[in-house]
Length: 585
Image (tube, rainbow, N blue to C red; front, side, top):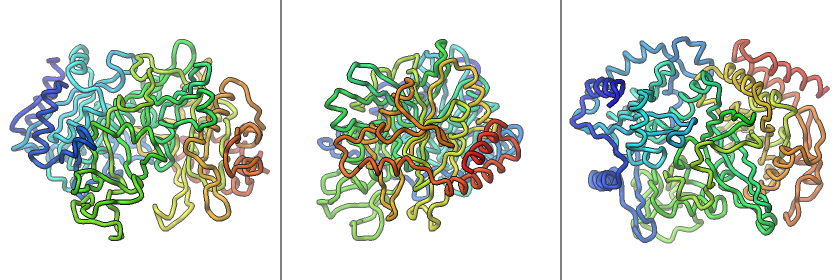
């Protein structure tokens, strides 16, 4: 064992005091034994083997069902480095507080040591970590989400470089729950939560918060983005990375099935990733992207054969379901939106209480999840394990906006694209809050996940672009324009392929567009609406229109958002905002 690994393990074992230390080797025999133990102790329920082969149900503590952003901290040396959008604490103060909580936290338990790789092992993209956890649930989920086992440990032992991840469920006390990041130490400590986003430390904690700091220092990008490839009838594949805030259809787009019009011509869509993209400049002057993860940790409610048929196929076997409803009659699972009708009246909800659809509550928690390996996906790209990643033709940003943004717009250049990404946001809905239509800014969909000051993050994006000789084109899409009755105008789902088609054309320098104050907007006839029911040329014109009065209000909101960064927003982005304001007059 590498001396650095040995020292760290001895340190955390001394602090947490587990009864036993178990290294996760990645062997099938070890995982089989862990599944059996988890079913015996009640952490997992084995589901109907015929209908859900090798699938399991887990229920979490009712106070522990989602990421807790107010309990999430960036503990950089200087508060300014964390920026105004992150919770900050002095590293020494946080270490002192946490060491007291961790002391003896694993007495009577096993400590599992999980060596893992983010990205293809041995590639230039890959980074490595070890997560120590007292939870079998974490071990079994990590096995699906990262590349776990001896091969990863061998790489760690070669260099001694790894992200040190410590997780303890302890007693799940919400008041003492902390998810903390120490970028200068490549360290993540999480305690008193077993929820995936807080406990699977390879995911948002490592792949975005810590990795974004590594990317800043090393000259690459760690992004909250899907990656998909669009193959045309000639066999050419163009790759797109896309960032969306929550509830904007990110996973659905990552697994898009082309509409019949395109499928008949031979178009195909390949999924490289649904959540994380690590992006590096290649020697050819292009950006190349790799999915840092090895699986999907997705939201269950709303996933069905209509919204995401590829994901439904992905979930046919070898899945861990968390906080969904349980049909006791045939030992199967269910969630809102999976099917319209429930045939059984012996349903228990995510809290393990008897439930019917007439109870006025949800059978599955709105944030209930599934964890499954990417290899299950029927549309998984053959480049998924390519150590070089895939070359990006386009980067797409998007949000949920009822009136302001058009269906699609292309930025004027890289710098202007960074501006478009920096002002991203979604409007609140009645389901989320009593205040409807309030814009919540979420630049590049990274607001909760950037491990340092977002103003510096904008500057980093600009710096990366300056070094590219063949950068991808940057676009913004909005699937969520509404009519006067609040109904969505654009059909979305597979029909989004029609917009992606134009994006690919523009990335090659083809396709017609008009320069507007916010960028290049396609001519209405550039969006292929053949065989598209209830969508006319006039409707497309409406979807592509700009309302100057709304954009003037938008500018006021953007200025207020930029002001939160206390003068650190890059000058070029401020200029882009001033130019937009002038052009709207």
